[in-house]
Image 1 (spheres, helix red, strand yellow):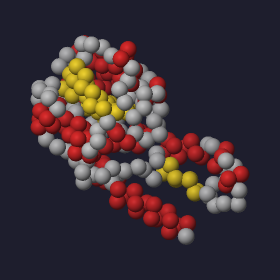
Image 2: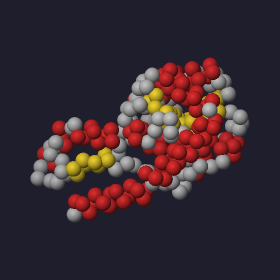
Image 3: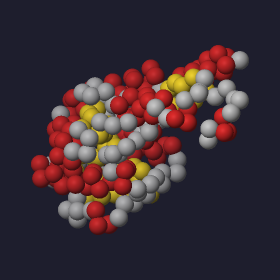
Length: 238
């Protein structure tokens, strides 16, 4: 890797401030000309809030049921699917009227609790379906133990749904504690469950956080913002 950079002017772009810190601490990039963060973005025009009741109905969910959403394209342990199921067992003891919408790769069956209703949607092949799932959810949970950024959580925020994540990595850049969702203590399943319950039990607070989440996306995480920052970088290099 060091040889590949020999006699080259290398500029490093990270997708999150956590990843930028990792790059700055990396021996590989010790000679880099610059290291900065340019966040990933979402299509905020298509990923936007939809009517929650209508979205729940379209997915066969009663409007009175509380919906928790989770999605991942990989079942490796660091994605935390097992931690989510542990947390949901705690949540279920306090609120049995919950449904888990799960999309992407289905985790191992051994992690599941038969008392919790789970709707598996597999891969969401259209952006309209993605927006419907995010909008149907009362809370989106990202239980990753390590996460470079957390694109699906940001997509959920674009649809006006607050996020609960462990306090680690990329999600820190957009999950503003108590504003756009909650950051739970790292790898603390009980705290993760408590943060989920706080959003499920405080409907007004959850709606306000959802609106703030959408506003943050519009302010900092649109395709236009990302393009402008790359344009500025190219001009600076040139």
